Image (cartoon, rainbow, N blue to C red; front, top):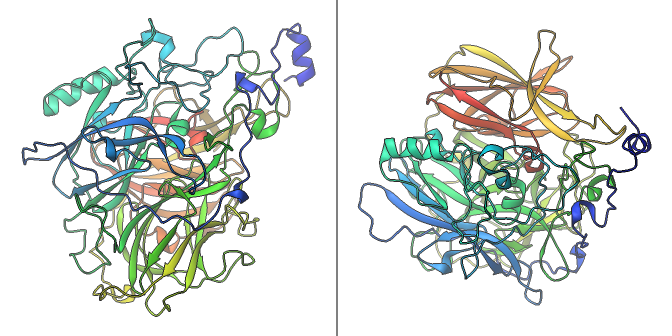
Length: 638
């Protein structure tokens, strides 16, 4: 291991040193002061329902959903609109938004979506990324062509940002589908642009194989610049969401706006209409007012003075490291290990307000942030000293995999990125004219599970949205949450095997004191020491079809990580310290989940049933980590 000075001497003075202002060839543009953004002056947007493709045949629900670039008024009036990417129905340009419209699905009725990459201009030429892409990572790498795609490029000097066509592939987070429809990170595809550069790979390594598997199962082909996915919806009613999952670039594609809700209703694991607060948005309702079931995605974002999305253009933003960068060093020039936005955005607007009645409301909350852990609470004073006293409780009725065994009354809701909470808030008895506030007491940096950590800035990221209580516009016939009987809850049987996996942070092997250079998953050896694995290393997680397994997640890093396992829903068994103590899952973790917080220096144990063969992935859902090696493929079956 060298010091930075020793490294430069050993390199003969040829290593490229990049200043913080131009790290990775991207000139830094500072974010605007979030305190200058007015709060609670714009109403909350309730995502409408995604329209189906015209001409349905009745056997299943069909959608053609594209990704396009457009301007959206995220900041309050008086600020410039923001250029974003978003999903929408290709037959109706008015439906493109960020977050995307909600896909409403029914248990047992399949949904088929053609996901189209339409990131082209009006002349059909590809659009470069809105944000700085680091081409030194192990990523989709279209310039590598058929032999170098989905790899780490061979470089002679530190490159600038990648400005070519953008790879996409959509993952239904929480879905239970064949692997060809899961959104595998190496099944990406470029837009069908007229000017794709010669020699570029137009699709990922697994695209053609999954397209053939889809055709064998369902017929038809995948048109250029798109993929067709089939969702059987053979699972419990639940709050799911869709987002991009392309290899090594998910953090940027999602931050640019690519996310939306997918709500699965009906079946024996749902409640009949009228029991829970409603109505919810329905197809073609024209955006009526008076919804009492509302999906809410909370995200943190930063903006420049001209309204553009801000995302760091170089590694120096994170730790002031100024080189040497890859390939002469092992620190990527642009990738940041973590990023936390300075403003809070809810359903695509900063600090909105929602008019509510003195009735019960159902909120389906998603933490859609790249890396921020939220600790949400409802209070009367948004600037109150933290921890603040809760003014109203949350009645937690569901997690990622559907309803809990029974409602849980909570003063706060803790959500890591990708976790969801299905909650009821009872405004009954609150006097009209009262203002209540949803605040965030999670930290403004990495979450470590420390209850005494400094909370988010009360003036900015410590505030989320306002509830303005108004006069009642009708009766509330929903059942009070403390009287709810939730659907019967199936527990998993005895496990067949226990599998030990590891979370590891890797510092620079070249420059002393620089790091992390990457964050990894892995296994444990016979002495329980971590064995880090790269994305491209051999498969180590291979449960049999029909197996029930305990996965013991050993976190050797200083931070908490939300771990997501594709394809399956699991139950949290317990958490154990490396040296002492076992504690049961939290009350809100006693349902089915697909993402769990693995705390530092603890073993988080989850139990899962693996029922469908195929190639899937598991990964950290801190997106900056996922994009730099904290993701591994796993295979169910032989």
